[in-house]
Length: 352
Image 1 (cartoon, helix red, strand yellow):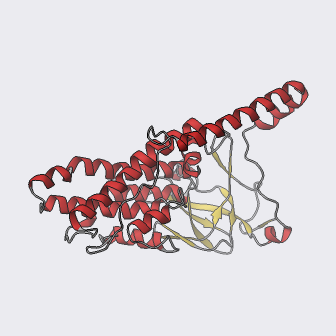
Image 2: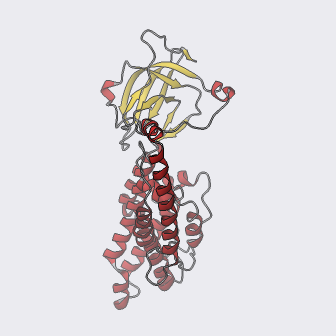
Image 3: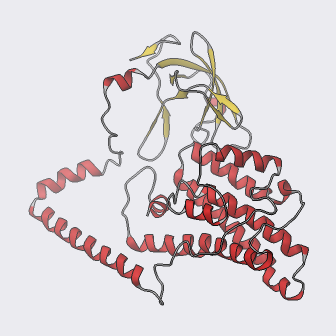
């Protein structure tokens, strides 16, 4: 359900949930794409190599170059909180693996030459992609990710695994090394539209019937109260997000907001959404990496005053230590605008 919502719902406005969309995303992407790829790779590994990653010595950095580029994009999207785009990239990685496996078609080669090095290389690379997917899947299918990782002999996702993955890709180190043992194939995503087993489709249809009943009752209620309908339209058509949970003043008081001036801005290499900003806070200069490159060009930012979260814990983004966060306002259409103080406010001034 979480995956279908991320793939279907707009990030900056309301949308309708449709059960038919849920079924399509589950069956076509999770079952036919991801599940099918993993199942074929695990099954073939069991058949050809007794469930062990084959022995192979190759330039893995070169062989996984396209996957590494997708991982870099995925990382940028997650850092910029673009979860819908990240979920699409996740599925692109799986599609790449499927296409590569189909292009090589090791099952055809196996008929003529079971010991072919082409089969060995294909299966080795596909197993690395499955290992990558088992980690990338975690934010979107958190209940299936542990099953997938157990299937290929990996522990559930832990803190630090993402950094380790990036380091391995950068250095051409295998995610699943030669000799690593994997489990037996299993169906991770039973299809909902399955002619042989309609039980899951029956569950969805019952939910659709319940929803239709609720919507019909709500429609009738609104017909009885036209004034309430008008008021509701005013509330829901502004496309603004709901308020977050209530916090105490003590929580807010921990945040140190300061006025600063952007001295310079430049794009972060190989990161379409990130800008490296140098900011004068009055008492010191700070480097802050911000995911605003799609909304502002580096040339228009120097000289602008901004509000900075000055006591945010440092964080490395693309190898650059970012010390703080600038505040921006997101409009209903998704456009970002910088939060700026009134003219003449001194750098370093506290925002209360």
